[in-house]
Amino acid sequence: MVSIPTVAIDGVPDPLPEGLAVLDVREPFEWEAGHIAGAVHIPLSELPARLDEVPTEQTLVVCKAGGRSGQAVAWLSQQGRDVVNLDGGMLDWAGAGRPMESSSGQPPHVA
Image (cartoon, rainbow, N blue to C red; front, side, top):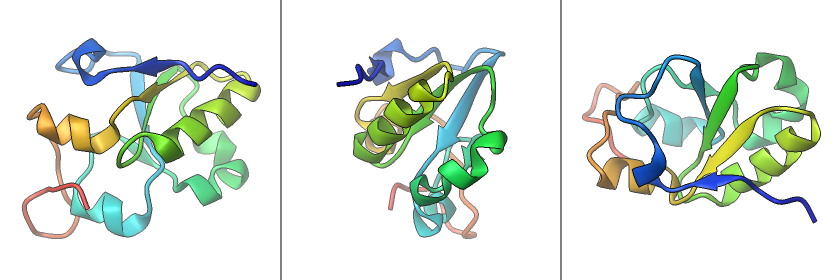
């Protein structure tokens, strides 16, 4: 079984440091409602086909609550990527008052 590197929200620097990329593996409607500024959006189901779009530097992988991003981290680790799962996902990110933006024209929120 693959070990999934995981970090809690209190272990993520605020603001995010240079050299740390964010990959959001949620569905498009979730992304539009609210996401981390500067994140790369690749839904989990599209990840294998879009591997070349995943940042090559250290990457924090997020989803709504941590389940899908855990799957993504396990797979990306097998591909040799330096990735870590955000435990609690976007729910914990928003709950900690971290900055978000939306593509919907509405205030950002976790859908």
